[in-house]
Length: 201
Image (cartoon, rainbow, N blue to C red):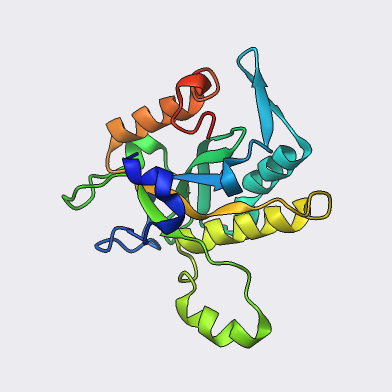
């Protein structure tokens, strides 16, 4: 990530304007807790031990396909202050395809970890305005917004101060090597936690 990460609350949305996030594809997403608070659990002896909040975040992540049948989950991990995961938006036939069969090179463009905005809960007087700026139905943004909302709703019963960072990070996976690198990164995230850019934030 670039240096702007430290100024995360003032970064404008910079999603890939050339890409429709409802499109069939694989996306690497990172969702951070508000203030980078390590409230999802802790790492001891290279093992992630989930807090009650972390367990809720895990359960809700696993249940994403129950609410979005066109989604298939790939590698994912709950970390102390963030969630990493690969989300696949399936084609119309809703059939999951293995990564080495599914991934195609996307349009030639410079793709890094991008910033996207997840909207706050709507108030009745703002429903019309919010509807006009909400992520399109079936898009990656709508999936992440729903996930964050469901987790927050359940966690707030026990921990009213819990929150997510306003933005999340997404990376469009362009090809098989990129998929393999990201999958390896996710699976080794706990082991490499002390060297992670999000460690100690």
